[in-house]
Image: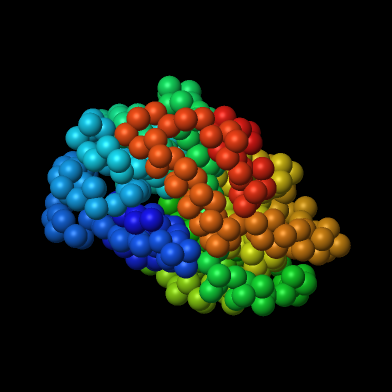
Amino acid sequence: MRILFCGQAPLTKALGASKPILELAEELRELGWTCDTLGPDDFSIVEKDRSRARRRYAESLRAYLAAHAAEYDIVDYSHEYLPFPRAEFCASTLFVARSVLLAHHLETARIPIGRDVKTQIGALLKGPSRRRERRQMIASAQETVRNADLVNVTNDDDRDALIRCGIPAEKIVVLPFGISRSRRPLFDAVSSGVPEKPVVAFVGTFDYRKGAREFPTIAQNIVAAVPEARFRLLGTAGLYATVEQVLARFPSRLAARIEVMPKYRPEELPALLAACAIGVFPSYMEGFPFGVLEMLAASLPVVAYDAPGAPMMLPPEHLARCGDVRALSARAIALLQDRDRLRMERDRARECSQPFGWPQIARTTAEIYAAHRKTAGRRPANLRGLSNQNLPLSHSVGEGAGG
């Protein structure tokens, strides 16, 4: 099979939007597939305005696929960037709309912003344009998935949201992300024993969607109950680019307890997590959060919001309602104060990560894509009978997917 992956962000594993398609492509090549990649840099788009840049990319991708899709058995592309009639493209090529972060959730997610004056004024001034941009993103995503032959999402909440928006269940597959075969041994080498010090980890950009507004309160709550607690924030670069900018969001009395690392190399992460006891992940909306998976792989039990993404990997008792800082803090504190339970949960965390590996996910992806290609260009048949023995946990295809 020959597949073209079309990324919406620069093609580097340092970016969460590109990392999954690059790692999946590596595994598909191991299975004998020919995999090509295409990113926005290939179109030389230079636009400061985000909306115009998005439109230019969509039109550029449209023209490229109209000319070249016939060269591939499968085209896998972002679910926001091809809102055009299916008839414009090669009928025998399977068109798969992939969601890394489902735009449809922007309709209902209530993500709090910062309380500082600058942020509040910015929200007031730019609010109308941001709401307009959000509506455009959702509309483009809905039209893209409506015209796709197949829609690939990473969690059950995404699938349910699309069904509510009228996308047939049999056209949706739930395929999570995984850890590559080269990185798994690095995580397995991290001890599952309880570290001497109660260090709390967070892996991800430090922004409002991922809980930047609440994180200082979470930290204060944990320190009040566990005075020796420390925090290690990894990969924070984004809304706040520097260590100083991140620390400025916290009370000054906590600064000495917080270690911030804006960037790291992927191979460094297991060692950086080795000294940490647990993880926290107060995100309001994810696809399949690598940060959670990587913390679990390093034997860190993770407490998180019950929002799209994290529940695919975490037990219900480690989830708190979105925005419920007190409940999330209490779950973290309970783990830190009970070493016997923490020891058990650290073993459990690594076990929870094991099903999520790119080799098995690639095999399942290959099986599903090959089966759906037979119906490319028209509504695919319901594949309830398709074997899903390699899918992690209870994940399955179409209407049979676990809820």
